[in-house]
Image (cartoon, rainbow, N blue to C red; front, side, top):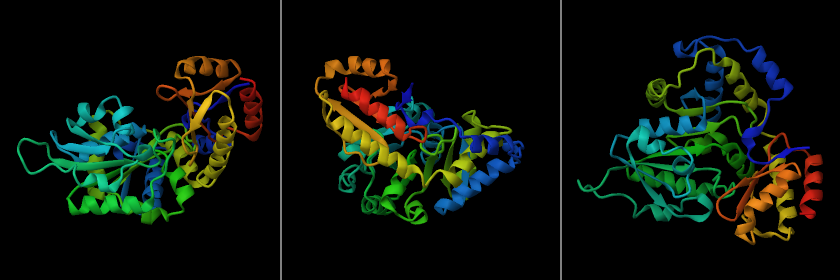
Length: 338
């Protein structure tokens, strides 16, 4: 028996999703002629109240395209020091866009709006031009922490007042929306662009969608092309994403419930010091003895439980649609004996 809690990216398409993919009408997306890709882009844009959207192969690609479109070489991008765009995208902001990064510390991967005021560079040739703010909701390195919507609105106002663009890395944005209850269009209205991932909690096998106005997406489509991201009969995978948006959003609350159960279980484990707050589908355990991290992961793997190291002395477990109540029962039995 194997229980894969390494990430919510490990999900397999359900039979219903596979059927939708198998039966999807196809065309050449580079020519704009794939009806399924077009349907996915329209559905995603309408859902968040945006004018247009672009289907891409990954969330890294959508984030990198957004940064490229919003900036010029030599500009500066503000983000949290734990942001995915910095830590987990292969240095893409520097390689692709030739921008510098300014990092802000904050609680659980989130930027405090008040901390932004001293981060704008003066109009001086010695400094890069501050151009873009990027936030991540939920915050992966913060253990799936959710932004307070009032803070998002303050960040939006700050960006407006200072002529900055605001991009959302929304890899798990639906996990946030499932908990905060904010209307999707009201939420979407705070941002100039949003990247939403389809292959995490929503369970699609491939892809992310970038949202923006028509001018932004027209530029993004050109960037996608020279990044090598133009796809042809992409409807066969886009159909999985469209199915996910239409059917798998409401069930995210199940993942959150199971994550809290895992959190309760780990809290009593003798090798766990404490947990980061479990807000959504990510559980981060801080172990008592960091030197035992590898041994604990190996012991869990030997019992068929796959988890991830998440920095020194931390272990991450992520729930998703392929985790069942019977898996939790087995997990409880094994962890109690570890």
